[in-house]
Length: 338
Image 1 (cartoon, one colour):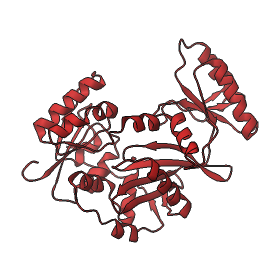
Image 2 (cartoon, helix red, strand yellow; image 1 turned 45 degrees about the vertical axis):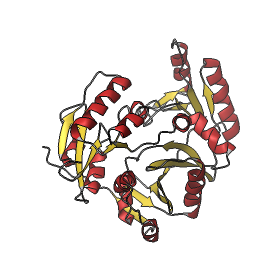
Image 3 (cartoon, rainbow, N blue to C red; image 1 turned 60 degrees about the horizontal axis):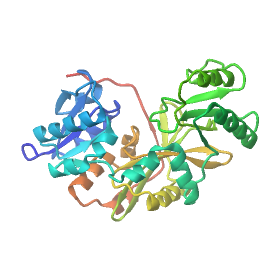
Image 4 (cartoon, helix red, strand yellow; image 1 turned 90 degrees about the horizontal axis):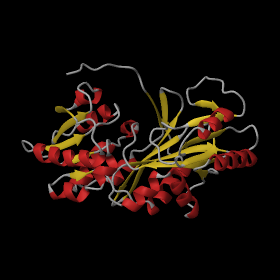
């Protein structure tokens, strides 16, 4: 606490954290600190205090620094993004100094959800959600077999995509073309070019091979409460418009998953259409960058996190009663940097 206010810290995040902080500032009890790896960072403009994080450190070194930072600034609630796994491995130490980390400490579950192959297998084996055909490969021969298997299952015209089994933000994603790629997108590459790349690697890290899913994703922001699940499905219409759609299928899928995957803080389920059904893509065990849009129907996920951390009563029934379909748009704007 600082001057009788709840001290909340966001470390290096996406720029969307600006929207999270703006939502938290509605509660006068909140005092927000933001840090990043560089002096100028957009989301810091919304915070009460801003600092620069150390560069060139590994996860353990960062977690040690974060513990010291929390002590120095009397941090009550920590929203970790950078080196999240390392921070989670020290949750007991953060708790010992009075800092609540908005993350789940179930390391076995986190390991499963962090792997695209393991999480899809879990969904399929527990009959929680439809899943796409997927193979995890570590050899060039394995890639060739998996590529052929996807083509056989979905048709020769269906494109194949690859990505690292453990990846965030689609950094390693590639869409494969049988012939020369059209070069319309930087992630497009031909089958032969990708095969040549694999041949030149000294080691092939675990990679998943699966059908390319061209339809827009359905992103379901979720929060478990004592009185039930709060789930807000977001369906992307175009780059500027998103529909919040409370289709029974989406809500039922989120509820089934929430009964088997226990996460106390906000998390995000991603689905995509494939051959007439919505298939599982992944679960992010933190707030998704776009969850601030749920505020359009009265759901403030950042504040729900803080409320849970402090044991405040959450009126789930009132929140659920206000949910309704709505389309939300994004417009360009600016902020004055400190």
